[in-house]
Length: 122
Image (cartoon, rainbow, N blue to C red; front, top):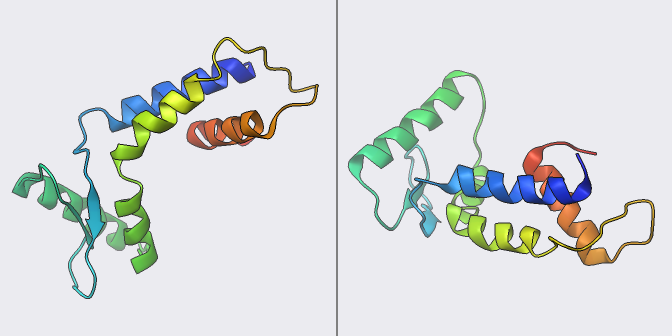
């Protein structure tokens, strides 16, 4: 996959993952022993909350400890980030990208973000 294709694929993945989610904003709940410790503050239903709690319980049953910092991150990284990130990645479309030549830092950062989204690691 070329660098340009990675950027486009990452933008598409962001949009796909965010599609049909509750956009947020989300917020973490402090000092309460509920699972999960974040709430969807806009458009949430009991079904949304029950599903989120079920997901969190499944992690606990699998022996995965979810820390307060994890809940904070999940609330912070709500689907609200998807569209601005996707647009930023797509903003490089039409620019020749050569990884074997000097590259501006912003483009290098965009590729790193795209690869993290795609989990390609290269």
